[in-house]
Image 1 (cartoon, helix red, strand yellow):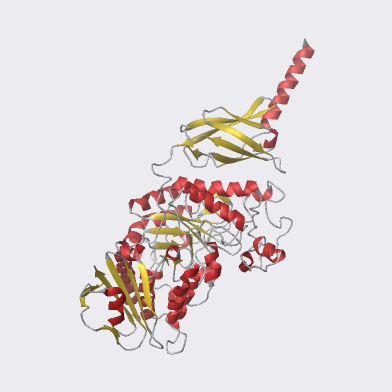
Image 2 (spheres, rainbow, N blue to C red):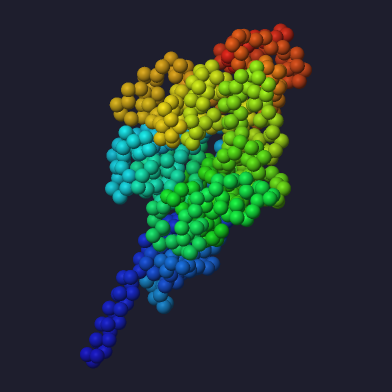
Length: 621
């Protein structure tokens, strides 16, 4: 009898030991939604020796298709089949060993927000404001320093954390709304628990968590909801090419091929042309796509199907969770390009009216156009991405404003010539236009702080085809006079911190030019909101006459005509209307000056354009 009892005690102790050695440290995504377009869902479970266990689910409409083991024993990848008719609710994912329950995780299928699948992404009716969250406004000083986060706040360090956060943006949504912005693109807010220079957000250490120094996932959702109340869409900044070197999985990678050059980093060549070069060597393609940006940004191998699915489901999770209105995809030509095609296809299939813009930093439109949906490429490559950032037009804008128009081929003719290349794009109206962004010198710095040129440039971006994006602070002429370092370019927005001597939110301390610039953009962007000729109208422009310094562009539809004339000359110029009447204006007799609200007589033969200025007219049909 004693022997039997002894054996029983030993058996119970063994079972206790077996149970104690298993736990779930992470399960991603932590929840999902009923009624998604794609019935499959990948779940990544992470915990010590979890690969020893076998999962099971007992819930109507949910079944496990397969579970996949990898090199690390601490990962288990589950693929669920979720019937489209499944009811929202909770169920247990049970993890068993030798037929005995060891662990369980209560999983939830949430109800989707009404109309989620049909959500309307940002479009050409929007004006997008780009914000670097750490540098905009500090709404909650209590999260400047957070236990467990390695880099703490230091506003004196240009490359350090300054304390801007989601509360700071939420608190100033009325300002952004008043300025006329209808979409917000934030530089990445996912966790960047890196040792230094983590404020920019591009070295993610957790793809499912908001950085605690910005707030929480709930705060991010609250920002989305508060923005939506004002008719403002939220655009997430995503990175699929790389993660941060201090990402939680770097201590225990799932697979031997989770990263490119996993045994030792190699820098990327940045030769993006290899993606479409018909003569490119396989070596050059690999060194561009598989190389790392820097040693602290390990390059992800999207050819690994488990990682590819992980990134796709993570994207859809954020869109659904935060009710997003768009995605800005960082470094679009750097990941595996076949994966990027599949990523965009899957996201756009889930949300057919959504919008995505990719970063291809090239001033060659034949390279930029390669990535847009609908483009018929020489190599048969198919993309599903609606939009691309228009770096060619950004360069043309700077040169067009700065160059001397009296020299052949210089000045405003650069704007004309760049738009003439629009035949390369499948849909040029979907391009995102911009004067600058977080990676280049401020627009006002690039045009040598010439206020007249600033006003012309802003008018042009308001009217030309595409979707304008403006970097925070452009409206108050922010500059980077001392260097082109990112830390200076991404300066603090004045008034965003308690004690700031200048407050751009209220106008206190701004110069006369800054106030005028702020009023100009406010006028242009709010006028643009209701002008359908700019949203969906045709474009026609007239080439600047040789050395004239004058450029005229029209947008028009069945309801109205918008006419923009830019005059870079140091004296007023008279502009003949005859060609415009023949092709665009027709029998129109009067127009409204958008900036002054005065009526302009179009029966006359000429218009007078003030020196170094623009004239913006609206003509109702």
